[in-house]
Image (cartoon, rainbow, N blue to C red; front, side, top):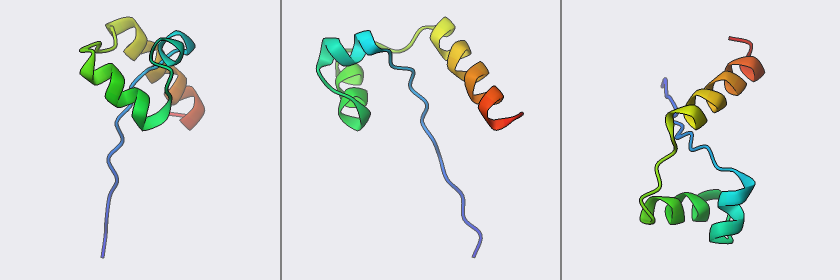
Length: 56
């Protein structure tokens, strides 16, 4: 049976990890609860890095 995956890309910097003293899913939850969505520049940066890493 065919399947698929969904990925949530949430840019997080070392500053975010230090601020929330967390990483991974715990950091994602903490940033969400703090209502700190990533800015457009952060999203564009991670997209460019992912495109380069994936060769697309």
